[in-house]
Image (cartoon, rainbow, N blue to C red; front, side, top):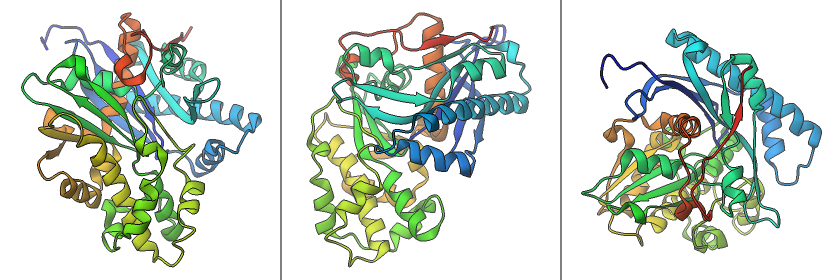
Length: 373
C-alpha cells in the first residue's frame, strides 16, 4: 500500500455460534486488500449470554425475549465498536461503514419458509456509534434460494486463492465450516461440516463450570468410545450433500443427551474425547474426498485447541496442517475481517456470495444499509 493512499477504514463485528464474545476489527481497504489495523474482544455478560442460550433453543418462541435481546445485542456491538476505536485512536468520522454479522439465534435454511435470524439491532449500532452500518447479510442469499451460509468462502477466495496449490480454509467456531480453494476458482466449494466447539464447550461447562476446555486438555485425558463415535456419525446431516449449513438448532444439548442414552456408563472425560474425535472426524471425512489438498489452514477459536488439531493431523497425515497466520491473517480475527469485507462489498456495489457454496441462483450484493443519520 502506498504511503500516500488515504485509508479506507471499515469495522467488522462478529459473534459466532460459540457466543464467546464480540470480535471487533478495524480494517483498512486502501489497497483493495484488507489490512488489519486493530482488534478488540468484547465479552458477552453472563445475564445476556443466558438469555441468548434460551433464545437459541429451537423450542423457544418468546417474542419478548427476542426483542429485548435484539436491542441488548445492538448495544453490545456498538460498545465493542466504540471501545475498538478508542483503543486505536480513530474517530468515528473516519470510518466508512460497519459490517455487523449479528448474533445468530435461529438458522432454518430447510424450513418451508427458509430463514436465518441474526439479532443485534443495526439501527442501534448506527445511532450509538454515529457510523453507517451494513447488516442482515444472509437474507438476500436465502431469497435467491440459497442457504444464507456459509458466507465466508467468498472472502476466503478473494484473499487466499492460489494458482499453484489446492487449499482448504477450515474455520472451527461453534460450528465448523470449510472452504475448498481449488487452483481453478470455478471449483471453489464450502459448507458446514458439523459441530466445531459447541458440544465440547457444553459438556465441559456441565462438568467443570468453565466455558471451554482450554487447549483440549480435558479431552486429552479421555479415551474415544468407538461405538458412541459411530452412533453420532450416523447423524444424517453428515451424509447430506452440499450445499448445506447447520447450527445449534441441530447440534445442541438435547441432541447430545439423545446420543448418550445408551452410553450413560461412560466417564465424562471419555465423552469429551469422543466429542473431540467427532469434530475432527466429521471435518476430515468432509475434506478427504475432495481434490488433493496440499495445505489446510485453520482459523477460529478451534485453532487454539491443541488436542483437536492433533486429532485432525492424525486423520489427515498427507495434508500439511497450519493456520491462517501462515497466510498473513491472525486466525482469531478472520471472520471479523470477513464482515468488514462484506460491508466494503456492499458500499462498493460488489457481489459477495458464492452460489456454488450457498446454493443461491445468482451472485448478489448482500446486506441492508442502516444510516447513522
